[in-house]
Image (cartoon, rainbow, N blue to C red; front, side, top):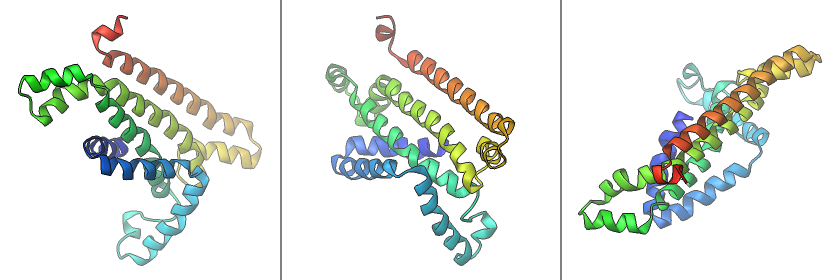
Length: 200
């Protein structure tokens, strides 16, 4: 998630400022979001396997068709749309009156971004992070099919062995983690609301 945020937030800011970039980025990310997770893993496996076998030093760095890397890259790709889209929406949420007041005070474009748009748009941006967190927790379970590790390993081992205890060992912590993450992010979104909106 941190990688997706590090890529998505700057990309969202740039997309907010550049209409042409936004028109290109959001449809591409929307298309990638529609690819089923198993299909995405299937696309990643041969590509990374080829890179691992043909690029010198790639295998030593852990590049392989099966394992952590394809799962990680797929999760990053799926995370970008909520982060970028909510960043754009959050920056556009600043009231025109607030932006006019900031211009009247002589604030530069970057000052308006940091002191007006980001604080006012933070709840919307955090809502995007909430989507990413809950989504990735579920997708990480499916990544167990390709050796991505995590709780998905227990779930699929349990399914293969018809072992209910193994399935629950993977499923219950996943549900708990998703629930805790969602509640935590809901609290952060509420705390990020401007005081006037929080008390309405």
